[in-house]
Image 1 (tube, rainbow over the protein chains, first blue to last red):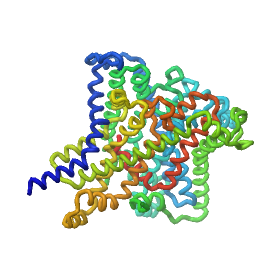
Image 2: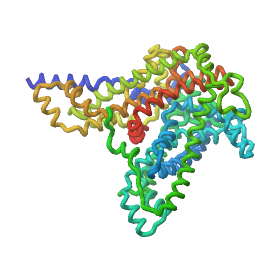
Image 3: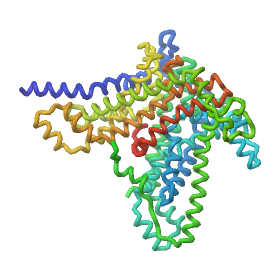
Image 4: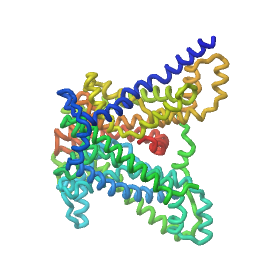
Amino acid sequence: MAGEKGLSKLYWLAIFLLPSLVGLSIFTIIPVLSSLALTMYEWDLLTSPQFVGLANFNRLIHDGGFWEALAHTLYFIVGYVPLVMIIALGVAVILNQRLKGVLFFRTAFFVPVVSAWVAVALMWKWIFNPKFGIFNYFLGLLNIQGPAWLFDPQWAMPAIIIASVWKDIGFVMVMFLAGLQGIPGDYYEAAAIDGANGWQRFFRITLPLLSPTTFFALIISLINSFQVFDQVWIMTGGGPGGATSVLVERIVKNAFSYSRMGYASALSWVLFLLVFTATIVQMRIQRYWVTYD
Amino acid sequence: MTEAPAGVQTIFARARTRPMSSLVTVIRQGLLYAILVVSALFMIVPFLWMLSTSLKADQYVLTMPPQFFPKPLTLRSYAKLAELFPIVRMFFNSLLVATLTTLGQLLTCSMAAYAFARMKFKGREVLFLVYLATLMIPFQVTITPLFILMRCLGWINTYQGLILPGVFSAFGTFLLRQSFATIPRELEEAAFMDGASHFTVYWRIILPLAKPALATLGVFSFMGSWNSFLWPLFVVRDVQLMTLPVGLATLHGQWLTEWNLVMAGTVITVLPMVAVYLLAQQYFVQGVLLSGIKG
């Protein structure tokens, strides 16, 4: 009797767990492990794989293309993360007030978040068109001669950063709005009685009490921006002249165009290590600026 | 399906008021509105420009100064796109892939979540940790071996190659497990007394009580699949099997300067997702707040 019951329990467990477990193993867990093994091979998918030890990593250290892509990714992060965080915070603070039409504005900021990056990137590529795009047209109205944007090695990355900030303001805004809702109104009432003005209330109450949300949004923006790809691939393809090549674009080109499976895997593990390190560093320094109460 | 998690609804409902003298209030509100309107224009004008371009006849696309209101207004670029490019087929592909991926995730994730939240077995905690650990790995790490696996299976240029790798989600399992774990046990204990099987409890008790979490996972996996670019780019070369994002990239490559055609394609890609968002706003918000778990 007991054995039968145990058997039926195992039977149910298998039914519930196995589809997910088998699927996740085949499409995620085994590929992760194979990817780690692949870093030690050279394989073009035509001939049989060659074991090369750590040669892929050695090659990576001497690969100028990798260092450039890393520098461009960091450039993107340094431009994108502070901009998107500050603008989203400002918008969230304003939209947290009792204003007419707040729902409309919140929707306006969030629609880009649900739109496909490829469509948004094509739209911005057209907007940034040096001759017929509206960006330079509006700059012209202000008597500014706009650059060639995506065709100019100096201005291509700023253009990508502008488009990325535009797309993600709503995403970060929603996190800040949730954080702002969590701040009890009594704090503000007490501060108002003590005669604190709006800026004082913002810097002394809102910002410190919001710091866990800021931390959360920072980590997510950071992780996402290390993986920047779709917009770069569509808007510049890494150009002009390699001026916007980024890490994931290097992984894709090596795996896809050059059929270097081992080297692409090595690059992807470097990406993982970078994301992981950045997250750990943030976790470590959070206690100096994040207050939980 | 209408109830949303309480904390989420408040984000779109509650606002704070503060007593203040009326003149200051008016000036302050005016200033806030000015900032809001300018920034909202910055958000909306690009979309209007996209729409406007798609409604133009060929000769009015490349003009300076730009023509903001198309004259004549024409749907010709949509017709041309449908005629010269398999955009209808791509729309159907996207719909099929996103729907099946979503259904697959809801089914496999909820079943595994039931096992993790409601069944006791040896190694449960360790296995759950393995699930969590996979969330830290960026998708790009798995893409090379996955691509090789697809080639070995002969799944390049197939629907199963597009769909199956996206069906099994550790994030979805985690999200649903957290929700299932909050459901009181009394209900299912009574059901088990009456001789109900695990399947009955899962289907009749747990799933109906976890509708908001299922809806959140549903809209997020649909959006993820509909907008996904990197994986379809790897697994599909045949235009007949492309989903809309990869199709758009191909379209742009073919008609570099015919922006009215390209913008018609982007409108077709963006509009369905905007409709889904407007119908299910609160679940998108919930999904954003949970997205920290997904690396």
